[in-house]
Length: 328
Ligand SMILES: [Zn+2]
Image 1 (spheres, rainbow, N blue to C red):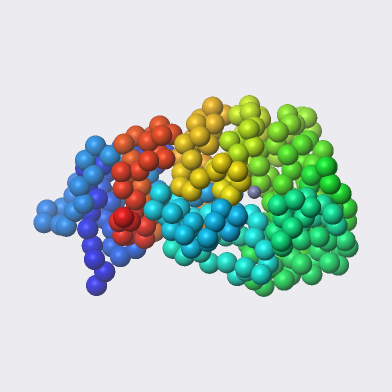
Image 2: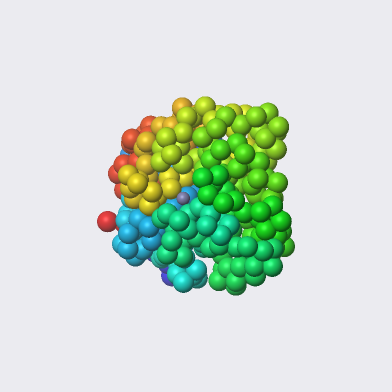
């Protein structure tokens, strides 16, 4: 029989914050109540607030360091799941346990395109010159369990031709994969949307014109405001246009760090985005992790106990639970 205990005395932060207790059995949340029964084993969390463990929807684990060490540091510091948006094909399938991960594999780009001339030389970028090559590449990545593909558009370098980018996106959609795009300027966003992108992997630096904002309704934006020095106003405009927002740090980029980044959370707040929602249930929805990101009965018991919901408090949990076990 799985060990069973209650987390008592805490407040539970969901859509609202209120008193409540959670029953943990094995790796799952199996009960939620306001009145704990007598005689149960309990873990006292008085004065603390429980939030689901965080999900970082834009990382590059192998760029950040040794994948095993980085993954363990992520879990220890409160991140239970990630979307890795750039790994070489040779590292796939990619399973950085205990961290839960979705991944895209290499960034698809034109011959000579971003990032194969810079940081993506060693397999992090994949050059495609025809629609056939694009379809073959997506098929290969899908066989290696990629759930996302990533198209890169950077006008400092040659750009994917429309029919090549569209073939990649079309093949991805046929196979149930989600299409993310690296697109920081307005024209690149246009190319990405024309190809069929579902997700902007970064908040664009440019203020988007009204026609592009209108096309973002129902699509996703991964924040990465801090790593790229982007104004929170850009994200606010996308949110107001009806885009869904997920928290992402671009871990592996310069000056990023493992764990929850209070600088990114503060920028989300400045953009009018609820940082807890963006880093838990919304990111879980984007990644298709039904069991993470919520304090629901049936969810994985991957939780953080925090002193409050301010960015610094969220980024510095008092304790971290991963799959029903306290992480030390
Ligand atoms: Zn990135």
